[in-house]
Length: 564
Image: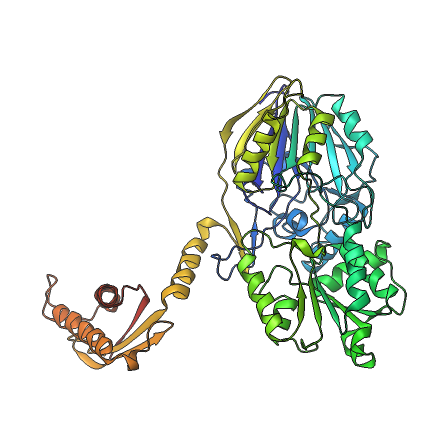
């Protein structure tokens, strides 16, 4: 690779919402852009988090000059505690709030002493290796969000994700249009930008509209108000605090991450509340219901988050009761719709009034809609645009939107990236010039990549969830292979065998027949010493075939052979 080209490689965040991470290369230098997590999809049973795949970087840690963080949301910083050591502990650059939230994560993982954290000021350029980075303010649902103008030997790259043109943000500064215009006059070789709201016409509403909706709810709600949002949505927490103080309510923060992030934001001065506003859960009994508001996690229906536990009456300190008003101040991430609907239904069953959905006005996106995307392109006029942070349809629709901008001359080239696609840019054009291996990396207790066999584990969990399991326990004579006890058949998540005597009898007969054939040498040899592994495999094969024919289901069959 020469200095005449800069390369960008998505290691996550392409064709999906979450785990954002790019490797930007020019010459011998690499700068990483964000390092986030993705919450597991419904079919990733038992998985805690999904991480970017850094296999491409493992033998290049000496070339990594730093990690640039755009803001403090989980999908942009959440993977750092899991991947930082394997990346060689490069310096991490972020704004003041972003660094504060990251410090809390690193401390929890006992990595704070090893990490090199550099706080930048929006609007003040700094050097990373030999490159110049110009951070500028963008409006999002969290304060201190940044875009980056990155000057490399091959030209200017603009990285702008999670932004909108909000002139009245709840916290933080509006998007710095003047800097964007100045960057545009330098003709960027590439613009890397999100496209998740490309289907939405017009402009994304301001965060101020959510505060107005909260005021209306707080003015008339008869009992407790419970607001569910992301723990890192500091702007939304501030809006709840302001409405609560205006209508004489105390605030209870529920959820470990909600409490931690809010404390950090309070200590840094981003959250502001009167001393008496925030109370502990055990103080709620001192106040009437119409004097209480709760801010909690669980807006995405996560199984262990506070709101799901409330909906299942599984929370030790708070129980949903008639008269409660529950507000979903978030839009379901694609793939979470079913989980969110289940929580909403359970809350209604418990007698709560649930406020949710786009028409309720209790949430606005932090991402740019069509007119904002057009405005950005007119300002920057990049040579090449790479849309990401969206599903595949979003990237295609973004390309169509650019093609419709006939008044934009010269019209930018649009590259639709693929995971691991190596994109190269110069002053004339951009192109995909290769690929690097990129897969899923899971957090399931520990960090597991595809080579660890975790995909097989997930497939087994999917099979168990769909068709259940059948245990078969049988004792055999260690000398002859003849049955000395059993077979005993135990069903879990399959059919109730005792209520299906014909199926139970057929299964037991299949086991006896298989053992009889083995003992007679039906497979080519007389068995004198029981080979339990071979016997278990044959029983599994025969029973699985029987169950498939009789029930059209495929339970996991687990024989246990006891040689006595």
